[in-house]
Image 1 (cartoon, rainbow, N blue to C red):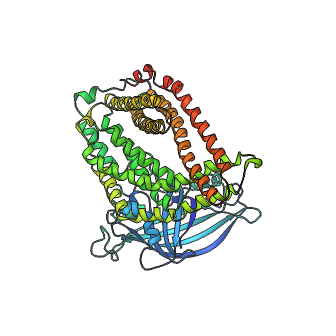
Image 2 (image 1 turned 90 degrees about the vertical axis):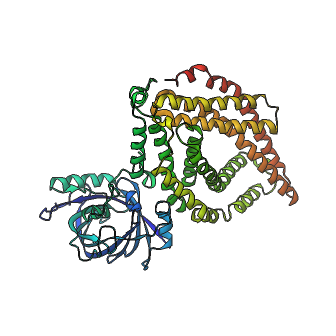
Image 3 (image 1 turned 180 degrees about the vertical axis):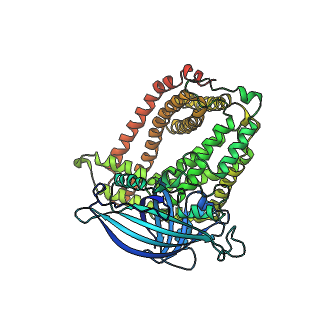
Length: 558
């Protein structure tokens, strides 16, 4: 069974003759206690192409010290990593390899670097003796593991690399302000911030194994996400898009809208950047979904929808012959991710509604009936989702997404100035939204109108996503346009949620009747949902008149 420890630390390096300062008296530090010396022996694993190192992830098998075992380190934010631990074994444990599947795919994880470290540990304590931070002074010796890329016939005979590293890690619920104060004291003594994000990154670089910046330090976001969508593949593809955009038209292309982005951007630059962000989100959120981290399923589902929407909106930039099959699989994945999320949201909605019913109108065991309904649908949902992520269909989708990063299917329009191309795509999606909204407003009340409004909601979401993707080229007008269409999407989303809630309330009432409990309270909630839906329908015409003003569309045109 793997467990997780969050590390908040700063890394430094120093020459062998640099003396570390006495840290007693720094902030709340009252004493520095020696905690002994450890000899650590670690073997780091990765794919032959260093897929994990490229994303700042490390997987190692370490002996010696207090925490011998397998350690998988996943970036959370700069200076923050989650270390997932598993007991010692001869091969990488499945519970850890599953967490890197979205990067490694079906490639074998092999030893790439071996590190031996002599570690001297000191604990910083406050006046009450509470541990505040740990300072580890490491003498590191690294060399390629036998058989690793660049190791030759055997890495054991190589001199390898040696350096001195200092790690300062917060303990307990420590304040990062203490790390800042310690950092200033170390800098005054001649200690420098580490030149690499991890020991592995430095080892790969200094032993000649780093390839195309695979292990270069990077700024990470949630679960290691690189906010700029950069990386080897992205850089190659963006360069390719720019080369296609060269020429007289691209040179003269300028964003005329107020607050528009960089001049000379091609449509490929803008659309690929947005697509990369979604692909990276899917790849990088998968470990969080496997770990059942809060909101991870929802965020991964949103990324699948945004990417699929971009494929459908920007058909002049991206070849549909390539993106259409990926879109089909993204729709499948979003549906699988939505099973548990939809149950959770609907249950919360109904529980909140029940809480608003006076006790005199709560007839029968309505809370228990709702709980039973929800738990039955929850049972097995988690196992089913993990089975999906472990299955061959998802692996095939991941390979397609990686291939998209490596070789984006750009069309000729990708080289044209961004404003004219992306504005055309947004306005095309708007016209689709307008047709659906007008049709919904004209539809007779009841099921036909419900279905028409649901279709309009999906069109509003697609238009919103297209406008969000266009923002780097169109600036503030695109931002405002996305906000307006989001209001339409939210209103129609409330209506659709009411449609789904009413179907469930009818099901609950039927179950209660059959059990002899009576369905009065569920019928009461059904009526309230009907009223809410009618309110949303009445509000739509006025909102649509405001959103559909011609001047909003005119502001998008370059």
